[in-house]
Every structure is written in structure tokens, then in C-alpha cells.
Length: 425
Image 1 (cartoon, rainbow, N blue to C red):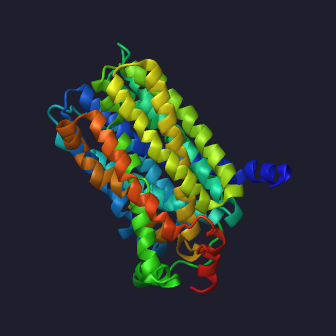
Image 2: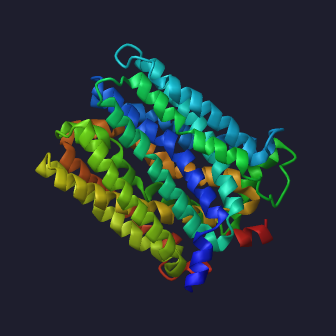
């Protein structure tokens, strides 16, 4: 692609919006999977309890169940997408802010309930944000736009996984203040929602809840046959299974092998940030030339091998250089793999049914982060950290094998596209 075309694709308002959608989407999730586990471990909660705590993420897995409501019922203010975005973002600002007022030693169930509400609001925000982004981006910009979204998504992790942990290590800061400061970072997303325009919709809202529920699934399963549809769904679940499991208890892992919260905040999260930034930006640009299918192959292999860096860190123990190397390699793979998978899911989505189909795909992608990750604490306590990471590496293989069916190396031209779905709904 000529330089001027690349420049035009990168520097436009749509890419700027993708930065804000990614940051707003990632912040609540990283609060749940990085800040909350670190908080609980710091307060003396056991690994098994923290592992089961990941079940609070179930709304991310089941969000496709209520996504038709966001299609059928349009808020009277701001529009079909922006109205739901604003409502969920305001709810997140409030619930995150009050989370730190609870005591993990005496109010663990109350914390679990409130975290579940955060996950519910976050999943609802994701439904609206994903649909908005799919309707905003033209097909040629799907790879780059979603790479930028994923990159900003990872950047959001620097707040709860980096800044918030550093603040918690300061003598004059308690966890209540930390959560209030963390909640303030929802404001950029709220400002973005208030300023952007509602995207153009190819069809009006469904006339009945029945149509809102049935038509998106009917279109997907009949587009290329049910067999291919089921293979796609399994691929979405398995492609990042191992990757998600490997980082599920990342903060407790670092604490257990001897790193301080400041080490984690300054070294691990900073290196992870730059590695994921490079990975996702490179991945987005590379997909312009490689295509989504080949990117899934290459980036998937990188994310598989990168898990071994954590195994090496577990074997060596506390070593700041190795911490930086392992985090850099891991998050390079995380960024590349996530960018390719998100682009694949967007390409597979019909613009006629963006909210429900993308909610289904992204919910399945989140399944390993909730259901499978719930038992990671038990596995680690049974086999130890090093063997756990070897197990994660083996679990990455099934997702790669499915690429032969759902994304053949030379199959980009034959890949199902939303355009075909729009012509034959």
C-alpha cells in the first residue's frame, strides 16, 4: 500500500475514536482481572478464592443474551448506540468508585456482588461500543481500526495494573482512594460518547423483540452453513484460551515469586505497555498487506511461544531483567493475537446485526477468561507456576489447528464478509 494511503488510513477521526472506545472498554475489565486480584491478595485472600473470583466475569460471556434489547429498544437521548454507551459508562464510574470502601476480609461476598455489577455494566458498554465501531469503520479499515482499539484497550490496563498498584504502595494512600482515582479514568470515554455522532445504521431497529433475537443468529448460521458457523465459534473460544489463562493470575504470580507492587507497576506494566503498543500497531499495519487470515497464523504462533517466557520466569524466580523480558515477549504476542482475532470477528459480522452478532463473538472470546480461568488458582496450587505455564502452552495448539478450516493461509479472498451478508440477509 502506498505511503499516502497508509497515512490516510491511520490519521483520521475514525482511528481517534477507536482509541477512546478501546480505553473505555478495557479499563473496567482490567480493574476486575488485575487490580481486584492484587487488592484481594494484598489483603490476605487465598489464591483459590481469587481464582473463583474470576467468575464475576460471566456477564462478558453471556452478554449476547441481552444484546437484542440494545437493538430493539433505542434510548430517547443520544441515539441507539450512544445512549447505551453513556448509560453504562456513568454506571461504571459510580460502581468502581465505591468498590474500595469494602473490606475483603469481612465483606468478600459484597465485593463479589459489586464486581459482578461492574462486569454487567462493562459488558453492556462493550455491546454498544463494538456495534458502534463496526458501523463506523469501512471494511478496508477493520484491521487497523480494531488494532488501534485493542492497543488502547491494553493501554487502559496501565491504570489499574500499573498506576493504581503504585499508588496502593504509597504510605499515605489506602485502597478506597485508589479506587476513586481509578474510576476517574472513565471520564475520557464519557466525553467521547458525548461528542461523537451516532453512526449510520443500515436498517431501523427491529420491530419486535423476536426479530431482534432470532434474525442475527439465523443470518450467521445460514450464511455459509451451520458446520462452518460452529467451527468459527469454537475457534473464537480456543484461539486465545491459553493466552488468557496464562495472564489470569498475573499479579498474584509476580507477588508470589517476590516482586513488590512497585516492581510490578514500574517494570512489568511499563514493558507490557510498550510491547503491546508495538505489537498492535505493527499488527494493524501488517494486516493491510498480510490479510487477516495470514495474520491469525503468524500472530497466533507468536502468542503461543510467548507463554514460555512466564515459565522461564517461574523457573528463575525474582529477576527484574527476566521480568521485563517475559512481559515484553508475552504482551507482544497478546497484542498481535488480539488484534487479529478482533479483526476476524468484525469481518465475520454482518452490519445488519452488529450488536447481537459481535456480542456473541466477543462473549465467546471472553469465555476462557471467565469459566476456564476460574480454576487457574486450583491448578497453580496443585502443580506450581512453572508447570502451569507449560500446560497453557499445550492448550494453545487446538486453536491453531482450527485455522486450517476457518482461516486458511491463502483464504482471505474466499472469507465470508459482512458485505455478502448485507446482500443476502
